[in-house]
Amino acid sequence: MKAFVLAAGLGTRLAPLTNHTPKPLIPVLNVPSLFYSFFLLKQAGITEIICNIHHHGNAIRRFIESSELKGLSITFSEEQEILGTGGGLKKCEKLLGDDDFILVNSDIITDIDFSALMSRHHRSCCPGTLALYETPEAATIGYVGVEDGLVKDFRDMRNTGLVSSLIYTGVAVLSPEIFRFMNAEFSGIVDTGFTGLIDNGGLSFYRHEGIWMDIGTMQNYWLANIDAASVMNRLALPMKRAIGISPHAISPEAIISPDAKLSHSVIGKDCSIAAECTVTNSVLLPGVKIKSGSTIVNAVVDHNSITIMDEPKQNRK
Image (spheres, rainbow, N blue to C red):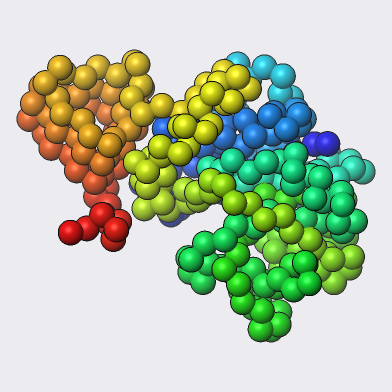
């Protein structure tokens, strides 16, 4: 089985970070977000990957090619004009061939069991199976309507009246049958391919109950880093075994003054934190320099910006 990884998005909701760095390379716990998807694929025995690129596409290509991801064969589909989740997938129809394949977003942090997802797909006898996740924020994120063990709607766009606390995780197993319903121009996979499968053979689902984080917004990105104990505890060792790197809060290549005070923060490669600094609940991207006596609280910091985040409600007094 091959995989298609969506990595061509503009990442506008993560600006200003994505003004200079493509979203798939923005690090979560000092690991590029894209590599979390690569890890899960390799862990499931999927080694042939097609990755679409557009925004800062050459940077993504160079970074991956210079990384030692042994055992993975990665082919790039470069989009001169961005094609969306639907058009980007349709462009790679011939590359994916005649077998079922797995589709993965590059901006999620999860521990979905891809092998269990594939087994569920094969048992369903449907042309597609989506990985769904239950969350109280489904109404805000976008709920999936389900009935009789099948996906029937998204945000009630088909006027079914079906409401749930389930969301689409950005992971699916799909049959080439989906290409019948997709457009080559800019389009979304939900209102083309997924809708087509709902009406032609059915769309089953697999319910994931572990870790799932969407890092598509600054707030979510910040939370994924500072609320990451479960990620480090459950993913660090298997990721190290699979692709040779693992999530960690403090880069060993950061220079930190002995009297600097750090708490619940992520410090990137080549960061420098001078004397008498305090860094709390913050993310410092690679190469950031913090001057002596500075205080950084509830922030995401890169070379050119400091973005102050809203403290989660459960942590407010």
